[in-house]
Each structure stands twice: as structure tokens, then as C-alpha cells.
Length: 152
Image 1 (spheres, rainbow, N blue to C red):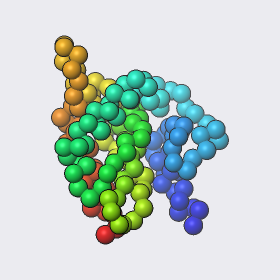
Image 2 (tube, rainbow, N blue to C red):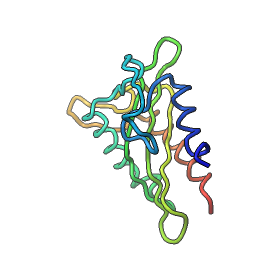
Image 3 (spheres, rainbow, N blue to C red):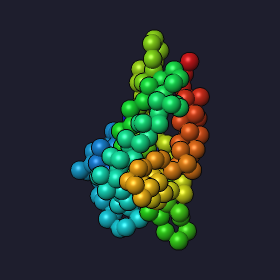
Image 4 (tube, rainbow, N blue to C red):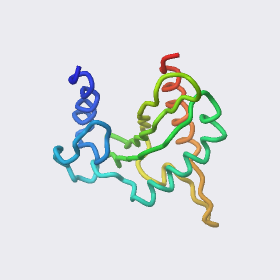
């Protein structure tokens, strides 16, 4: 049973070539060795991560959060990528069912082709920021798939 719980974590680390960041579900971050190469560090600063998470949460009320579930967006990690990999961002979120139903659950959405703050957020000269349309569409697809896979 324990093997089944940690298999996705181990597989993710092996496939990405990077150790998971602190705070990942079910992982003792102290026990993991960290590859500090540029492709393995979070391409988002703490301020950029916070801003992107707030923008995701803001748009949620008009989109995904109108359904059967509420959402808590917990962490956003981006990998810059390299010449053969255009990068990816992983959003960790908690799905919280409304009313009677299964307990809340932590899930992730990994979106390929995004590599940092500028690929996730559009910033106007006035300072106004909004979620990048392509990133929004990728998240919408991923979250829709997550919700469809939930037990009814």
C-alpha cells in the first residue's frame, strides 16, 4: 500500500530529473537531495508565485469554482526547461467538494510549454496584471480533467 502512495512521487522525480521542492505532499524534503541546476530550481520567485496564485484564485470565482467543488491553490512551481524541453509549471491544488461527498483531495496540474512568470502572467505598462490566456486555457483543461476523474 505504501508503495502505491509514493509511486507517483518517485516517478515524477525520476522523469523530471529534479528533486521535488519543500512542501510536496508525502515527501520529506530534508531527505531528498537537491539538484540546484538552473533547470531544477523554481523559475518563480516567492513574490511571483504569490502573484500568480492570487491571479489563478481571482479567475477561479468566474470559472472552475462555480461548480461542485471549491479550490485552494497551494503551490506553483515552474521549471525553466532547456533546448529540448520548453519548460513546465506544476500547480498544486486542493479540491474541496461542496456539500455531502468525498473528502478534499490534493491534486496537481502540470502544464507544458510554460517556463516562468512572463509565460503565466501578462503585465500592462500601467501595472495591471492578468493571467496569460494560453496558461488559463491549459489550466482549464487540466482542472476539467481532474474534476471528471473524481468519484461521484
